[in-house]
Image (tube, rainbow, N blue to C red; front, side, top):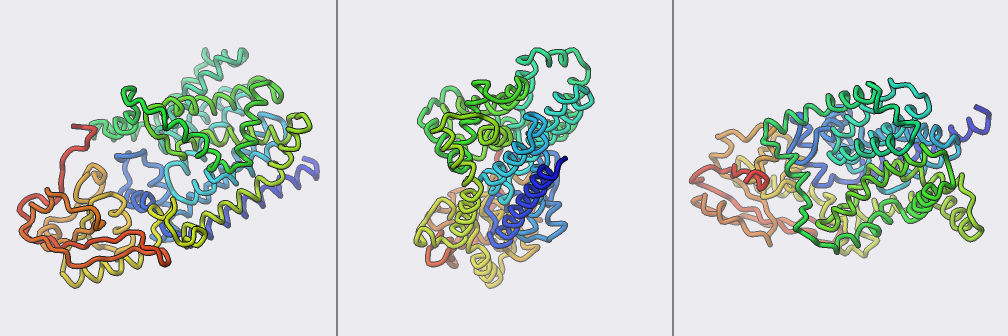
Length: 500
């Protein structure tokens, strides 16, 4: 490595560390989202699977809280640090595939400044470990291509298995790899090699705990996630949301570079055929499916997370390697120069807005419901009412409120969701003694207590109301209802819709 290349690698590493440091600071300041609080509860009862997702997000949170405690910073710590190995993997993958450390450095920075990666590792969801696994999968496939050694298929299998332990979307990596092998003539020999199938066994072995958990629970998680879009539910209006949401999640300038890079790869204007096809298959296999999905149901923006490593490589190719016409080159130069600063600024503004609301004049915005600003103060009010009334357990109607209550109420407080018990099947239930006394039911005031709950108690009375605030904005007002004299089972153990 010559001095210029060494300086480039060092500067890239320093930039990534700085971005990780910024996320760590944001993690300490920003309260948990309701999904994070829910996954934090999973981390207290590790299992082979859960109702919504495979277990990797719970493992990531458990490791972080073992280091930094049950704080917002602890919940997010390991997820944010995962950006370091993710960055190494994408750097090496891009370098191998396109033979340029400048492309490798650019791909690494561009991936890290997207909101998908910045927010996706800060806010702990299954997408955080999935991003890392997808980056390592791309690296392992690049090593298969570079070395021609079959043993690298074991690394491919390990990466795919870890991706499957993160999110079911990783199942699409299998078809993407097969399409790559079938499309590139010199790679078809792998279909006759045992190494390819050994890699598949490694992936299946890592995914086995999820399969076994589902087998023990009537395949509920598989049914839930794989039955989201049904052909009979034709709603093409959702397709219009795809590009605007990805324009935002990629950040506008990275999005432009990525689209131009994919176009250049399609037109064979950069890289060798195997590299071009690999980036395209890792991107388009998932994108085509979700485009079909969007004809029937909403596709959330974060679902595209596994394509972002390949998308970042395509963006770097556009920025560094492709020769463009003068007008296009001016666009490329502008995007290359300002993509990173714009990404950092957008991330910082998003964090400031989520925590304060000041950028919207303290009015409601997209972050206000999901980020738990004001929940610590709200939980203090709820705890005061619980202690005053002598309630032995706090109940809620949904998993998000349950997660927030469990995280922000004093440690050891009995908290339970009254219904949807399949979500909590891995966790210890409240004891009969805790459910036999007075209970405090916490719900938003505009959501009435279900008749099944109201009719199950001899006395139901609203004893207080409490507001969740972000500055002067009232986010939600909660009713605190005291339930006494249970006539039957307190918790609704009806099977989930998937099993009815």
